[in-house]
Amino acid sequence: MMSKIMISILLFSVFLSLQYSKPSAAQTWIRAGYWYYGSGYLLPISDIKSALFTHLICAFADVDPSSSELSIPYSAQPYFSTFTNTVKQKNPSITTLLSIGGSSANHTVISSMVSNASSRKSFIDSSMKMARLYGFQGLDFNWVSANTSSHMANMGILFQEWRAAVDSEAKQSNQTQLILTAAVRSTPDIYLGNASFPVDSIRDNLDWIHVMAFGYYTPQQSNVTGALAALFDPLTNASSDYGIRVWIDRGMSSGKLVLALPFHGYAWKLKNPDVYYIGAPATGPAITPEGDMSYKDIKAYIQRNRGVVTYNPTYVVKSCTVGSVWICFDDAEVVKNKVSYAKQKKLLGYVAWQLPYDDNSELSLAAAQGEGQHKGRLLVIVLTTTATVVLLLGLVICCLRRRMFKLKGMVVTSKESDSKINHMEAAGDFNGNVPNLQVFNLAEIEAATGRLSIENKLGEGGYGPVYKVNFYYTANIVALPHHHYKCFKFTTKQICRNITLIYEMLHFGNRS
Image 1 (cartoon, rainbow, N blue to C red):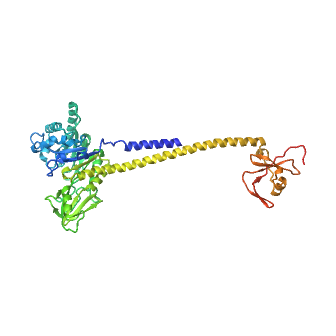
Image 2: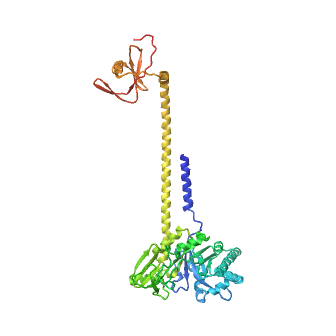
Image 3: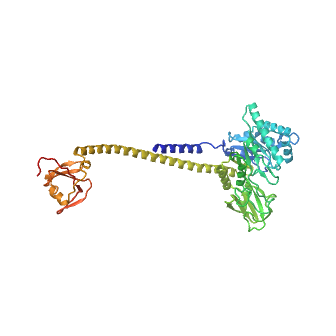
């Protein structure tokens, strides 16, 4: 029994080691961030705190409309060409990717490129060449504006051909294989275009995808306030959790999903300043022409106007109202909660959009700390479980020791019992030879033993003192006190005995 318990505990310990010591199906936890040259917010590449990230993405390269090859704006070339070397100075292990496309890209040019086989080949060959030239270790395809079934089908073909070319290039150049990723919408379905992202091709050919889980509501699209990047939404499907679940339901592994964290928010102009909840009537954008604001600007606006920030745990968003202005955004607390969510859902990691929007790396640091919070909870689980295993082992050892002592006691008791049996056999088997014992009353015992007088005591046996008794019809009767005690009265004295009179007719020649 004890061996089974020990085996069970050992197997349980091995299970814990496999669960918490080994990495998950994903090879690593992605902590990525986009650095966008055209964001309008100055963030020198040298100021990026690359130690907070595992991957940094330089955005965006364009597609040449005539050749379908990659091109970089002339003014951006000094930044793109030195990006990898610059960020590796603070973090030599950082992995860099070159992103292509973006929301500002020419949609028609990309659509034309993916629809033609020779154009796709030109694009693929030039992308690998540029990545090697500038030291990028991967390529990211960002065409979230694709919205027709033909777009999606051609995109799937592009990914398939791209993967084959990358594999071949790595073998021929004897270099590390380039990483292939893509930025996609929050869900694989494009409802207005009745189309869906090519999930099968994405799953089979890309290393992972960046799920751009934001932009659910904007002041230009909605006449009511809404959460830009709600993690949950109890009323609609406009949430990151819904999108992640749909991607997984369509066949994507959670280990290939990287959750995007928006480092910006939107400002609405309220129709009634006294009505400022999610879903409140609004008349359009506030503060900026489109209502979009970086986290840096949102924080400065709130501090300048002494705005009161509230947290909505249902949607996992922050909001602030200043007069008729209502702003929805993600701060450090929300970012930590989203990173924790990504861990719980076993996603591959998170990606910040975008780093220039941050305020002195506050949100980037919060994301890294959010990962630490999950590790802290995991550590508590592991330590608690380990302590439980140690306690169980201690209990098993104690039980084993008690069992050993008990066995030793049984051996001693067995020896003593054998000795007593031998004595009994020497005196005769009373139970077997004399089945009908005669019982004497107290007066007879008192008279026969002379009130247990010393003169009638014959000695000590295994059952106590032995007395000689004389009756007119017996030769010798032996009286043995039982090992349990009971009180008997002898005139004025109380003698605590429980006496069982056991006798044997002694065959003497004459009787008194």
